[in-house]
Image (cartoon, rainbow, N blue to C red; front, top):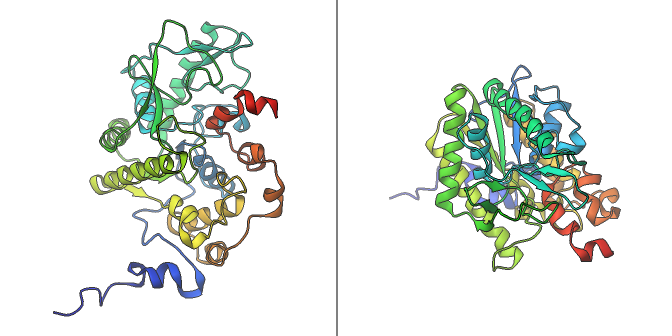
Length: 362
């Protein structure tokens, strides 16, 4: 019997595709199942890293769908002002809420300064609201914008970020724990939960199915954020806790691709964290992704999903293969500002550490 690997293409071999590819270009996408055009209305949602895709789509002249007016520096520039959607459960329940299938029992929290926030998007807007009624009025408008995102998009890009969350008594998943930026009512109880693979799989499949219930022709692109956890509430060290989270999300994304037509996976996680990058795409805090890393991701995305040529992607990928360093401006930046200020990304999770007494004392 001949060696069954004899006829496998170059991309199937680590030595040829990762360790020493032709020209030093590492491109982990074999083939995109569909292409986007400038006429497409591309919706974006998810964790902090999803904002890079939204920003680059808009800058490239492609149709990034935006259904709710607001300041991108405040809400992340997603298609609606939902802020960061870190978990598949959070996305699933947002869809259900938008169509009257879920109503959070605990939706308004109060800050120390007396202002009120939407518990499901606690930093949109950054200055909060003057009353509980104002919060709920703004949320009603927001849910209408969410429905327009789901019904009007021709493609939906969802970046999975975390498995850790805080759940209310009714099962509502929150992007931040009570006490990080605002306090929940004393009558409400919340608990930490780290989603299992079975739970994430079911939630993600539900997201796709609910999207197709209202928009059967929409295509879906799933990604996993390469940004590590800022902190963990599990018993584990934050490093293996991050590995667990990203592994579960990656498997769930693959199962959605295998289950559904017109669902694609884009390997932004692998481009940034793979050994071929030699750590060059992380800033000095080893968490924030540099602009060079974002450029490498978007070059591959553009080549396969936007139909661009190879030239744009080769330079960025080649730098990663030879251990490129982060730009000097990023290296010199304050670590606390690297994610939100230097790179122009709004990341609700950063508030976990920034709100600690030790952080305020520095």
